[in-house]
Length: 309
Length: 308
Image (cartoon, rainbow over all chains, first blue to last red; front, top):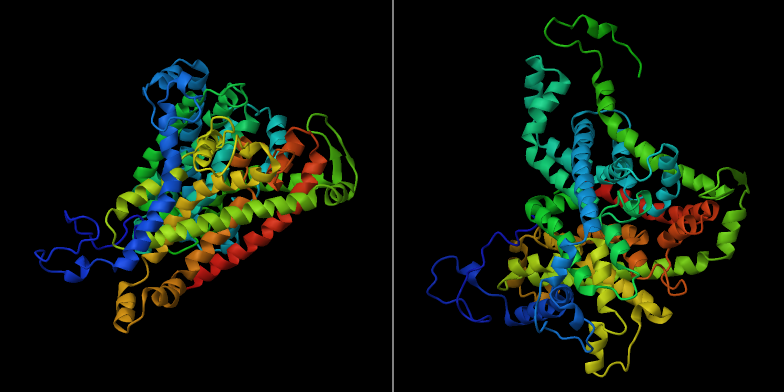
C-alpha cells in the first residue's frame, strides 16, 4: 500500500465553498460523499491552519529572503513582501566559482554513493532474502542497528584510519563512509523487494542450468529495477544531505555543498542572507525531485523493513 | 571458508561453470562486500573509539599512553551530568513536539477535508531540505537584530528589544529544539498517516452506528490500531535525536557557554577541536551504552512486529 495516497476514496471536487454539503445532484456512492461532521471538520482545519503555519511560514521566508535585494535585507522591521523582488542573489551564486567546486563534488559523491550502495546492498539483500543459514537473523539486525551507532563517535577513529591509508580529503573516503551509512536502509528495502520474487522462478532457472550469479544478474535484478532505483535515490539523498562526514574527512577542494555552504557563508561579519537563502533553495532542489520520484516507496523504505509494508 | 567440494565435483558439465560452493557458502560470499564495509567503516572504528577511552591520545601526535579509567572518571566528575541532562532535554523535546504536531496533522489529513492531498505534500517540505538548510533558515529567523521572529513578537508586544535567541543560555536550547522539530514533524506525520490508513473504515462506521462519538472512537478504535507504528516512530526518533549533530552544530556550535552541547557535539568538539581522543572516547563510551539500550528496545520491538 502506498503511504502517500490518503484514502482509496476520491474526494469529490465540488465547486461549493468548504463546509457545504455535497450537492444532491451527484448520484451514487452517497457514503463517500458524506462530509465529516462539522465538529471534526473544524478541528481538522484548525489543526491544519495552526501547524501548517508553523510548517510553511519559514518556507515562505526562505523564498522571500532569497528574492530580497541585498540593501533591503537589513531593514528592521523586515518587509514581509520584498518590495522589489530580484534575482540578484541567484546571479551572485552563479558567479561564485568555489560553489561550483562544491556542487561538482556533491554530484559526484552522491552518484557514486548511489551506485555502490545499490550494488553492495543488492547482493546482501539477496543473501538475506533467498538463503537460510545460521546467524542470518542476527546479521540482519546487526546491519539494521549499524546505522544507529553514533557517527560523531565513529569519526573519532575513522579520521585516523583514513589518514593512515592516505584517504583523507579524497572522494573515496566520502563515498565509502556514505555507502556504509546507506547500506542498512538499502539492504532492508531490497530484501523486501526480493522477497516478492517467487522462489519457483529461481528454481526453474536453476533447473535450466543457470548459475547462481547469473540468476541474480539476469533474472532477479532486472525484475527488481524499481526497487533498485528507489534504493539508489535514497542513497543519493543521504549522500547529498550529509554534513558531518564531509566536514571532517574532506578539505575545501573535495568538500560537498553542506559543509561548503557553511564555510562560504557562516561566520562572516555580515552574512549575505539573500545569497545564503538562494543557495539553500538550490541545494534543496535535487532532494525534492528525488522525493517526487520516490513517493511510492517512501514509507516502506523509511521503516527499513521494521514494519511489514 | 572451508572447501568441501568433493561431492559437487561430479555435477560439473562442460557448459556451466562448476558449482564449487554450497548454498550456504554462496550466501556468505554475497555478504562479503557489504560486510567488509560495515566492518571497516562502522565496527572497527567504533571499537577502536571505545578503546581510546582507556588511553591518553592526541589526534595530531602519534603514540598513546594507557591511563586505565582516568578519562572515564574525569568525564563522570566533569561534564557528564550536564551533558546527559542537555542531551535528554534535546532528545525528549525533539521527539515529543514533532510527535504531537505530526499526529495532529495526520489525524486532520486523514479526514475527508478538501485539499488534504495537496496540503500533505506541502507539509513535507521541511523534511526534504538538508539539515544545513534548516539551520541557515532558522539562524536567519532567530537573528537578534534583523530576524523576522523578533519583529513579529515585538509587533505583538510580547518582547521588547532584540532578543538574541541563539546567543543566550536561557533560550538557545529552546531555539534549537524548535528548528529540529520543524525538520522532524513531517516524517512523523507521514508514518502516522500510513498507520491511520490501515485502520479499516468499517470499524469506525460500525462504532458510529452503535452511537460512539468521535472522541470515543479515537480512543477505542484508532489508538489501539496504530499502537505499533506509534511505538516505532517514537523509538526511531529517540534514537536519531539522541545522536543528532548537524542542526546543533551549525546553529550554535554547542554554545552559548555550552548550553546546547549534547553528547554528539561534545564528542566531536573534544576530538576535532580539542584533539583529545582519550576524553572523546570516554564520553563516547558512556554515550554508546545509553544509546545501545534504546537500540536493543528497538530491535526487540521490530522482531515482535515481524512475528505477527
